[in-house]
Length: 207
View (cartoon, rainbow, N blue to C red):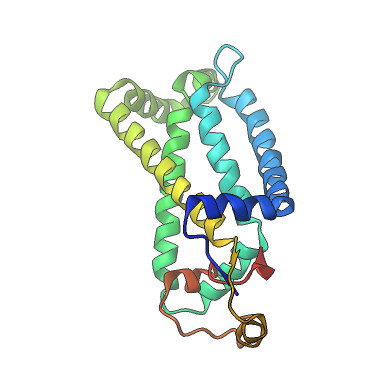
């Protein structure tokens, strides 16, 4: 029998045993990070350097993108689509997208596209609003709060995906487990468990 890790020590132990899976996820995350970093160097670099804050945001975003291309995530989306609660998850996704765009607004400094405004005068009002948000205390406070919420939300999603992607073996009858495993049962799950509806309670066949 296999269960979710219940302690941090069990989680680390299960992670070490699934080191091949960990390396695959880290490799995909690294590819996304390098791709976004090259874009940040071109569009968001001040004096030729990308700020540490932007690097941290890119690391979290790369982790989320790595999760989004996994088989487990795609299976979760399929399950969500067939549940009556899918609109609730769409609203959560919309909130996360809003946080991401607000964080991008904070990372993208107004000075970086000032020259574009000179070439495209119709962007002048938008640039003024952007500069006002960055220069005002209230705007800076709102953007900082959005950044904090994004980091908290992304950290929770990454940890949830990490913990529910691994299993710890127990002493239960393995043959009984094989007969009752979700792999051998019907995919129509009527559980109201949010993890089940997200596809996170699946066996590691969807890792």
